[in-house]
Length: 101
Image (cartoon, rainbow, N blue to C red):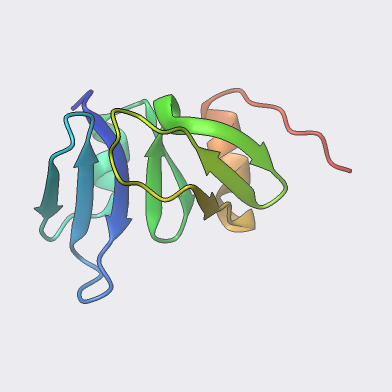
């Protein structure tokens, strides 16, 4: 569970998720809800409707944009959108503070 870095809902079937591990392996989790996965690993946080990240890959947060760190050459997005609907829960979960400009 501690190897989880990034999860993304599959476009073909929203019940299924792509799971990216630190080792570079990618798995498809079938018929999982994000809420179930968040309960399993306290280092994961949901940043929008379709993506969860590990705190290990959190680079920076600027308004509605999250930059991801590169780890072990694994192909992940450089950045993802930080949804307003998930912002407060994510920030509270990790005791993060974000200045508003």
